[in-house]
Image: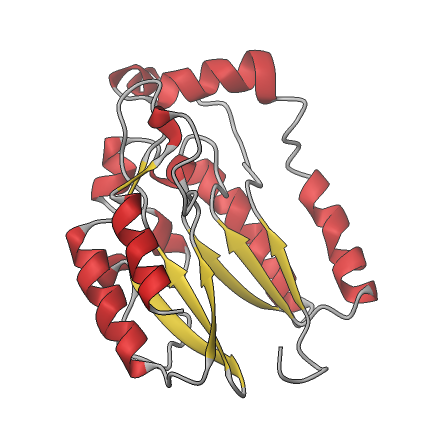
Length: 220
């Protein structure tokens, strides 16, 4: 990407998890995630497993890590703390880390309303432009000469048994303005948790995703 010293690794869906035993979970979607974790996902998402990546990233001379969402399972405070410990470890060994939330990081309406993800992780990532994920749904960072990283937050607190994303009108307006501020000759690495194209099941698609498609086609 413009210079040999920049080497990017992309990871996603780490799903740090901690089963909640509190009765409060039954007043939100969290209980479904906990049941699923207890009977299905517990063996798949070990909190220790992601740490095995660190030595490999160092050996491969990775400089930058992009984590494209779903750091947690039910968006609980305990899970966010586990996720932050891992991200802090990546940064402690000298890696530059960029993050966006996924649907599991806004799993409950409370976590979505309070933007819990951004209490633990940066919304702007030292952006070179005046946009942040929490307020605008998008932010941008110049990675190196001729290359930009554009991060998007298209999460949505969804009903039971749904995991849709949402490309909101606010994010649409911000993205259009942001793209105009990036030199036309430069290349863009765009990161989003949800599929850009509408090929998945209806309850897993990005709402207003076709509008995002059109913006990207026009900006090619």
